[in-house]
Amino acid sequence: EADIYQTPRYLVIGTGKKITLECSQTMGHDKMYWYQQDPGMELHLIHYSYGVNSTEKGDLSSESTVSRIRTEHFPLTLESARPSHTSQYLCASWTGNTGELFFGEGSRLTVL
Amino acid sequence: AQSVTQPDIHITVSEGASLELRCNYSYGATPYLFWYVQSPGQGLQLLLKYFSGDTLVQGIKGFEAEFKRSQSSFNLRKPSVHWSDAAEYFCAVVQAGGSQGNLIFGKGTKLSVKP
Image (cartoon, rainbow over the protein chains, first blue to last red):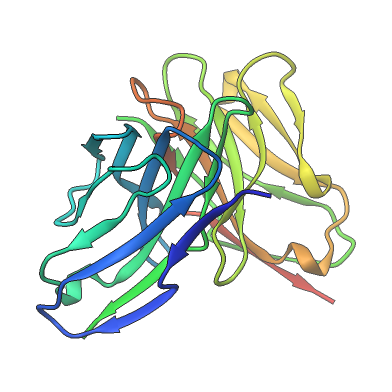
């Protein structure tokens, strides 16, 4: 069973608010990822990290930012949320041992 | 550009019937392929993966998939569907030039199971 946790699971906020979606994993994985998922659509990679102090943007442009100060923690921040940011955000970490991407349960964000 | 196509948006099968979910990919070299399942309100769980070797791969929950290079396909099958298999299924391929966690996903196939 993978140990990767996301909080909050659900968040409804107003436009212009700053939000941080938390993601933590206890498996010691170096590689971590954020995917964005809209209903009926494929997941798109928006950020990834190969280790501490390493962050890269994915193939889908996003106004969010990420940080990786500790191996186990990979938070995603939106400085000023807009309705277009309404989506589900899935955090994941990769293990090379089994070649598997472990996903958290997701954070569903609604911006009014 | 790389892509993954899942032609069926929604499939309904009767419990106990067989299942095949289609997946086609575009990628020149040998791909690394995955099938994930997502239950409502949950994250994604890996069903099975293909990296190399035997083109018929077995996964969890009784699922299997067959890699066919000539057809650029990686279809998921199960001989007898259970009501608990109702979920959304995503096919994915590793992005060329990216690490193995940089995946390109299809749009998913939603599976409904009739009693």
